[in-house]
Length: 165
Image (cartoon, rainbow, N blue to C red; front, side, top):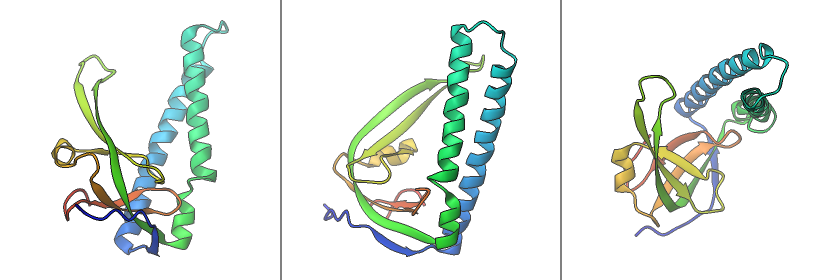
């Protein structure tokens, strides 16, 4: 078993890693934008009475708006772009879990999320994996992580020289 060393090391981010941060930031910005627009339309065109449906969509609107504000002011990738620094550390797997989900459209397509949770202290508390990688990892295993310093975007994850890069 690998020795667990939770020390964080800061290194200069490579051009490839920098492109990953830019791409993931752009994709998440687009998703947030469309979610905000969709919830905004629902809230705007609601009837004046406040039913459960309206309360739920109003809450979602506020939650998405908060997420966007958090991204802009706290987990800001532009800080990563300026500093060009990444964190390299090791995390220990605390728990594994599987979520079974059904899509919200009419097709009732089911899908499964494979999640590993990391021991504290860690800037990243959990990660979604493919089934192939999920089945390899055991609770207590040590995983090497590389992620952007400010926005915590995972750039590389290795376990026994394997996993997602």
